[in-house]
Length: 198
Image: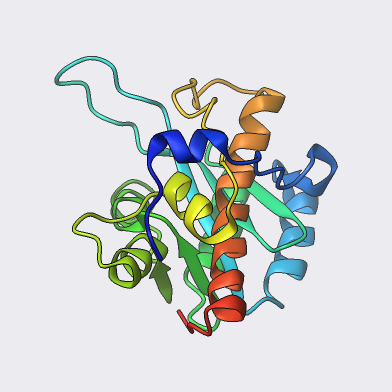
């Protein structure tokens, strides 16, 4: 398995991922109960967080403003402005029976612990898994991972948008959901195509 160049990635077909109607945003107790009902039956979920980007030197991050969890069919976005969303995300993230897979999740774990008092159990950093598989010196990010494993190009257009603004724009919803969705898809492909149990 070889990491493609940026030029090679640009030539790949776009990763389509989930559509807006496959994405649920958790804003109230009803949303949270529905999400928990579905997510607690899963054994593995794609995981990511988004934070307001920092542009000024010395400015500190306010921590994650969005937590994303995804199955292969649906994504759930938990805006941290809603306490009920944080509580529901905490239940899933701290459940040791559910594996959470993502890219570069060490910083996500640290931010969630320090800012929201969420202790995450049972995680797998696909950046490290793919780094080891490819014999790379550096960890492999989501865009390179999707290209390496799925042979697709992950769009990163909304990455530097203002994640603390609410409501989220459709482009942000799609970007956030598909970051978590791409993680579960890469993990499944590694298990199926490469017989690798992450």
